[in-house]
Image (cartoon, rainbow, N blue to C red):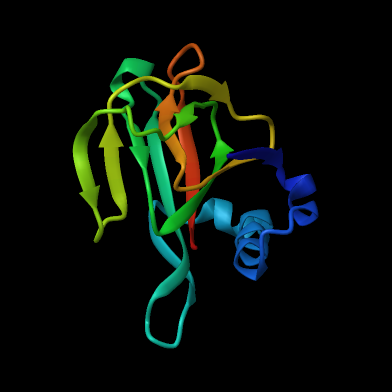
Length: 154
């Protein structure tokens, strides 16, 4: 996991897809996009190599935010508005699977709780396959957020 601010994103050397994803997050026009799926880059074979899921919701009690994990895509989670924490812990073999990994959706769920880490101002989280994470947590009161989860094919 990486936690930082968009001001420092160019210092990370994660490759051209991540650079393009961070550029997309920096474009103020994207904060006005409606909730939904937005393709940023597609490979010649039609595979979406970078896309954003824009979401708007009310944050929840941490107990209502299950730990999830992905295998094909990294997440870059960024808040346009509101406050939120993400629960995080390493994805280890001792975590009981509560919903098996779905390759088509690139998501699975495990039992347990993570350490709640609030978003820094203008900050993002990069979450990799080894990161079990539980987004959407209130900090401490529930707030309405608008968020982009930019998915980067690994």
